Image (tube, rainbow, N blue to C red; front, side, top):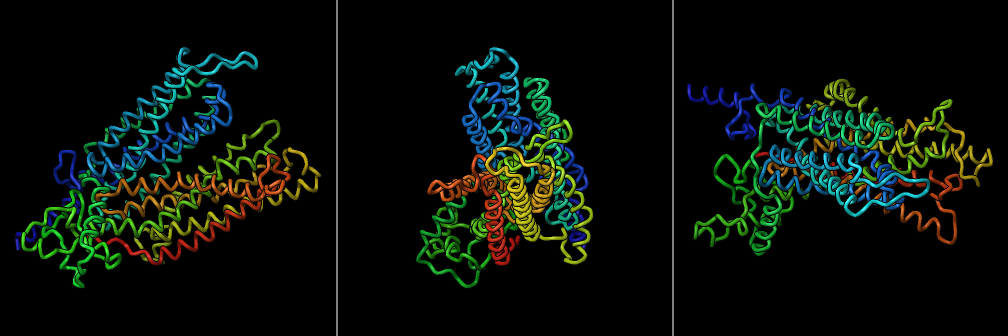
Length: 574
């Protein structure tokens, strides 16, 4: 009796999800993790995002005005760099899950990031590292050495983001014990405030930092983001004694390959109806370091062959070769990724809609009335309303909507991750519809004022775009934050960084999809010498048709998502 009582007390004192301190010892709940550790992580993310957007937001201006690149070359360099920033997280994720753990991956890649920021600042500050100013229309090109220094710094930043993007949100969520119902609720709130921190950094960069770069100089304009990256590193290390750590579990890619190879090698064996006959370690802990056991599921039974114990293995007693025999948990890891794939794929279309904010929304704003008295509003600056929308909706969702929804649904977080993402997909349809309605009215006014053949702005206020930006911000709060929650909660314990990286990959693929749709639409609508939907003179085009096309695609994507979400089976820990 005394033994049982003391065991239960110890269980309550320590986390139940296998987390440890920096020395690898079990952690006490009351001294570590939870919200006490999160300010350091949220501060890190806010400063890092301020640094990133301080470079990304105005990078095309630096390339054209200071390095004297052409518009096409500058745009290509920016999109290539941004695409790289969303591909490198796959590198950081594999290193974090397999070898280093999230803490040391963030620490190492943050240092690389900071070196890149300092290199970029030096390239914009030292006269020998940048081209001379233009003399009239004569603008000297950058030398190969000047290009080399600048792009070396830029791509060090891209590499640095690869270790931070997939790990910081997961590391923050690691501070909440999955086995404690109270801490699970707080974890859902963490993802809301994590995204809030991102947008605070983005808002400061898109306003103050951009103004400094344009008016006070690029050396200072790049130096301030570099300084904030230094603050991000300092903030991260300051919380070390409070953090909870998850042990790396070995290469997830290797484990997935082992399941495929083992199931192929045992293709002729029958899978027993009794799942308890499949191979699993007898210990309470999983054979995978840092991972809990996962219960067997009846889907994708062909993969279960990897866990079938053959007669030869029974006779030899050798169960140690994972290329021949895998545990149930290892098989379930691959099943989970396959089950998540349709949900992941629907995020690509949403990201394609999100990509319009920095492309066609801006082009639409360019042919609207951008003046307020004597002041002219840059069309791209209306993206600030998207950020403001996110900053507005996060606390509203967390403090008002969730408690109300909880009373009706009985769910800890008000809505499930899948329901939340579905709401965001619906809002994206409304966003595209609002953009189309604005364009219909703009074109109607252009016809009434006989401006169709003139490539000029139509006297309709650019502030009519605010609803579409505001709806997009609300959709972000639901879909992007829902994705963060979903890919963390549903991913196997030892694959959480990798799954976070895969969710980031939808952003890159969404941009590629947007470009592909635009290319196809332009090809077909300009056939036979027609003007097309999106000509240089938008007054002669039909940008509204393109927005309706995306709205229709979003509706189809949403319906497909609903089907996939209904069929999705939640992960069950063993």
